[in-house]
Length: 254
Image (cartoon, rainbow, N blue to C red; front, side, top):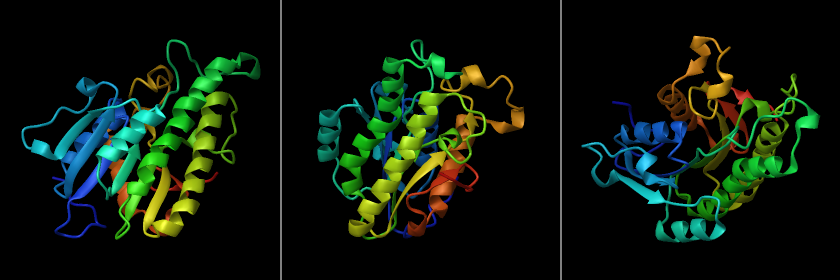
């Protein structure tokens, strides 16, 4: 069984919110959290709770699945009001790369205004609204963290191939959003960490059409990626707030 988080007291039980728990990585994160003895409660937010992590025989009341429209300001406000502070960890695991109506652009002539706005809404605006309502709930007395799944392709400095314009832009905007949150909440929550996390290339529906040429050793299962991400979160310190980190703990440049 995985150990407790290094940053929690021996007698404490962490309270965690996972937004987007119905997706492949989100579901794996919830399940990995429930394997840790120091996690006392996981609030799993998803539009379809039936797709989220099923409570195991030993989870008892530790898992609380909440039906939520995480793109709705009103829905998130009601959810936050129903969850009492303090929260020790928030993980935003929602996002979109493609769908039946969306596809990553290869060239500028492929850009479509409606599609671009939808990618930005899901990948940037949704995490912004989640931060708006849940960052104030973070624990002020000890280390707490607000994290969101970003992507290496959102790095401007690391962009050498171009393409995927909407997705890259949405993740670059997300990184700026997290930096802003880190600066603002450093005043009221000096022990908090706000960070973006790159999960690697994960074998989920989000990346399925683009994994054909990925070497097997570089294609992670959701469970493997979730374990890496929780280990990265465990190692983060308040001085790291506002930065973006890959699954192996390496800092990704903006």
